Image (cartoon, rainbow, N blue to C red; front, side):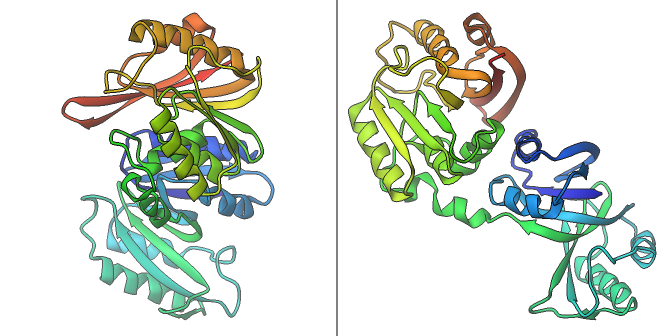
Length: 343
């Protein structure tokens, strides 16, 4: 069965990586059918797919909606209407259910008028014997104009507004230079930490990553060398009722036993104004990566975001590098995301 993930478009790679990680966590087998601008179409197999996708939508940060695909065609009016006319909607609409059609244009794609195509698609579905309801429909059909035209029924939607409410400046304690909640949640998802498992951030700062880990049900552990920042992190974690432990300590000497955490997600300092007890960034990265490797369980992942390239430090510590990708934040800042595996 084909499903389409309407991606946020705020990053070239993170939204897809996040989707893949969440599907793997839920035991869903998938293969990539197509990747369009802001739309990822996957062929997904498994049991209770729709139910699992609803759960996944509750974790995702960099998607808008998950659609069960009706059809895909070129962004041309005649082909769009023909595709809908010839589609079997039995797995999307049941007898007596009402519907509405909503259209979305991804960036600059397509010249078809949104209101016009909503009406034409709505008419096509009406002719199949179903009744429209613009205010309170049972089923919402989403039509995305991207490199191709994708029509599907919404299985689940992501509450993007919740991340805006958790913006750094809206939390009880704010300190500049932190990750935005959507990025932090995507990294937590990529780590594949599950409810009840342990997530470590050895450079926890104001707890932006830990808050997102706590909200997916993980027990989160933070290490922060600065007492003031650690106190602020506690305020933020309490605000969101996280199950947490915070240590005012040095990431180069972690007071945790070997192989005791299920995932690591961290944003270590890299030239920002931060109190560092190590002799240099070289020592900090060498020793902290060794400690991350030591405390992470076998077969688990660590996700690191940094301005610096960390592959050398990670491999020296024993990690296998799974993936590396970048994000240009602005002219002078490019973030590198490195996914590591302890084999």
